[in-house]
Image: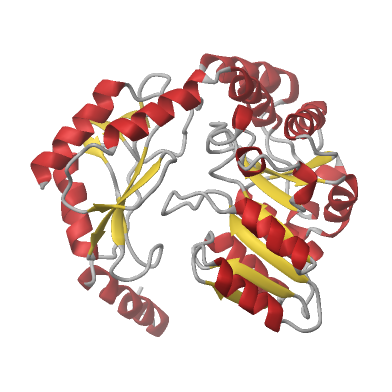
Length: 388
């Protein structure tokens, strides 16, 4: 096909190769229950430090059994939107269990975290509202604010003085403070207690994306509010995913019954989406029991972080106490070269490059899992020292 449009598409792609920003899908087959031991299309064994399966639950036998049993009962797909017959008893059971775990009145399930964030903004945020967002927030939060037509203002990462200045300048409309709980690329924890105090002082509502926090930080893995010892009601809207620490797929919004009622009527990405497969809801329900009951998984993660940070490396660590351990390299080409060198040693650590991170901030986004053993972390440490 050599149409003018095809030529324009090729022209748009050409600079990506030159800048070291070309991306391709690489099918990798997991081996065993942990999900961190992979095999590529050529049959090479790889130890992954790229998964968000922080607690090592994605391949857990309990999740497999729960999913299989529900599949035999309900089939694979829900077959309809939740409001048009796609809701199953297992969906309701999962939502109720999540609400009880987090100490909130209600939970609403979504197909993914991206859909949840878009739905929150569409349902709650008006065009005259001010949305004050940390500059390192996940892209779905930025997209949600833009699609809602709100007045988006991004404050410098973690800079509460800058945030307060922007809040003071805002006139008319409601104020929303938007933040990740744990930032997906830098791995640091948002200063939620300070954000809550600012919100209460300026009559603002907090919307918190807990995708990388739930299951990982706070007592019982309950996320940022528990980490900062805050009453759940002081954080107006919380979104969490089931595809990271829970090892499954899907997402949810947690809060008051009034909030959930409003989202159920107004969140277009909920109203018009097919309910996620009931067998995955059953797996997530099984995962919640493990998230609550197996504290050793979070302790192992903390131990892995301490062990890894003793390594001498060819870049600079970005400060993080979470399983996300970013190794800043700088140029995209250098990060690719380091990633390839590690892969030659059987380690899968992809380079993260612009536009996911700013220009000049390419990195290896090393993620640790409870499925890793101390010997796996030592293997990565040694490889990084050799690559230096």
